[in-house]
Image (cartoon, rainbow, N blue to C red; front, side):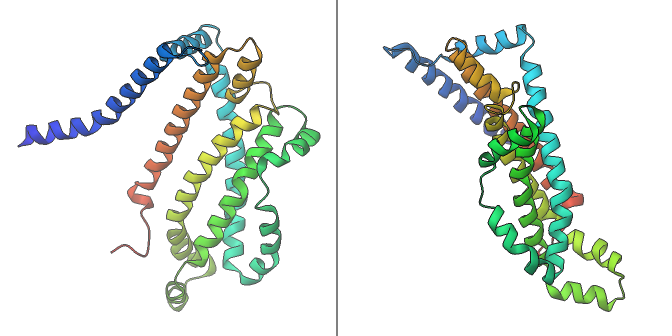
Length: 259
């Protein structure tokens, strides 16, 4: 029985790998049968990645992209979450700030590219600013909604037990909003990773987004273009898995809906 359970668990883990391998085989077959070779096959992409490693560019570009995402994402979280909790907690603050939030929220972060270049020039600050904008409003709204969804009965119970304002925040507010904040952080990190690639195509001269444009302009190196796309997808998957692991942490499973 135990061996059968192990085999079934192993089979479940191998299914995604087998599916990816099947897609790679179909990809190679499609490239071999194509009369016009517009895109490289899997081996061509592997060769492109090896070429980047050989020239010392792969780690450099990955580090540059992660650097920009980290600073923009962290800055947005540090500012947006406390502000959102405050706005959600105080009704008058929501009434004052909500019109501005609803005006600026629908504006795409990419629409700010000309202004970012005007203010900060072509470089890291422009990309970090765009990532900051892409993360700020989603995290702000997540924090506001998380506070407003706290059942009033728990807030009143905390006050009836004589909790101070600081104790109410620590014992009621944070345990209630933290699960939603973690989910919002996970989704927003994915948005930040999308925006950094777009920003690097225009506002900087390094990073994985820049690699795509540079490879296209430098003699149609589509093996490098697809290699950059594959690397972007893998890193995005790893970032999402990292945030998802936080959602499963026992210390963060605080929710009033749990039994």
